[in-house]
Image (cartoon, rainbow, N blue to C red; front, top):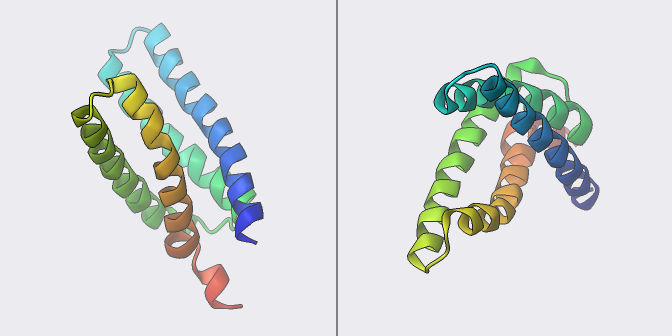
Length: 125
């Protein structure tokens, strides 16, 4: 079960990344500063990701789980920043550090979503 969900999670993650970057680019195109573009893209991206991950990966459409989902995003954000800082200390640049941190962050995000956000599904089995 974990393997199938993780594969769906990766595919949905690619879709979510495309949507998130597309929103960011759209806001830049309309003249927003990169800070506001990033903020609005992140907020809309979290809402979109909540729907796609919940429905397509974990087969759960309970909107009351949004607060747990946001907590997961906050945790993953700070872990990502920490990983980038460590990698930069080893001489990696911002681009490669950010790219490398995507992989452990994807695993951490999947596990937190599965066992924290959508855990009720597994407690009842």
